[in-house]
Length: 366
Ligand code: APR
Ligand code: ZN
Image (tube, rainbow, N blue to C red; front, side, top):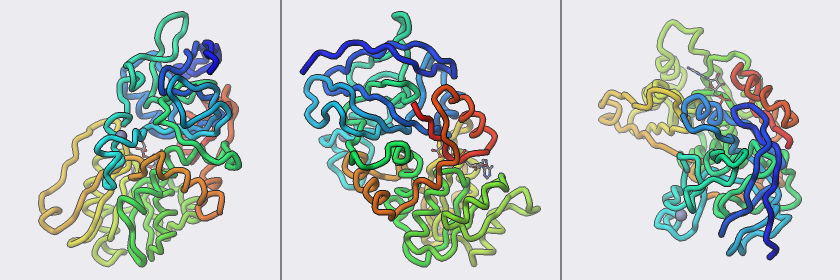
């Protein structure tokens, strides 16, 4: 293979555009020309709560392989890919187990460096710029481990399927893989952003009979209906705890509760909202503050389960291509989550829209 050179291109750093040097891919890595990246709440949470700086955020993205590092056999230049914030090495204990998607080699990266050598592939005037979740898609080019990218059909529209690289896939997977919702179930979802509404879509496709959506933003209801939410509850409109209202309208508690806000207090509320005996609460949110969860032990004495999840339990390489196919066959909705399309220069607008609760997903076109 030809030895690729350093690329100089634009990338966002702390919402400031900088010329960034993107080094060639190292062994088993690929350099990707980012085509589209959508803004996910976790980018905001991480930006507001972490100290790693300077850094390039963005983790929900699609792109085209620009060059491949030594030893990469799975990709060639020109392949269409989705990047993933949690990889799949296919050989570790977790990758080999049907029960887990927590790859021990390429799992969630928290320090802003590449998995392989703890180094960065970005720099500005010779100073390192850190990565985010080993993806960093708020850049025209990025370098990712080949285990953190998934080859997808050339026919699939990259400006839509980027949503399947995180939020929409996470929600569908939580409903299907983690909770495994059965027909006729009653479901409550806390937080009706893209993640929560993807859970609603998953629940609807499984034949849930009642899908209760809880959100403090009344504007979310219209959109929620088209993803299957049957009852909308705004906790600010009630003088009693929302779990009491949920228990009443669900006839004693829901079969499944999903926390899609990133508020640990709501995990407790979600647990209190599900029914005794088999009630299952699944967490999808990523909290910014107060990471501890509090719950009265009686929840567990009455047979409830609290279950965590990351990326909806999907093994990215093994499972994402079939999810993309489902989209292509119109078996799942993705386009409906896209409320805004913006050029890269306007990335700040996407942050504002999300902070103000005015969007589901803003797709940023690079
Ligand atoms: N009670 C009810 N709803 C709330 C509350 C609250 N106390 N606080 C926020 N919400 C609602 C918001 O109004 C919004 O509609 O939760 C929703 C969250 O949606 P988004 O901000 O669009 O976030 P999303 O991208 O869907 O991610 C949700 O999953 O991946 C994680 O880090 C992510 O924790 C975040 C969660
Ligand atoms: Zn692995």
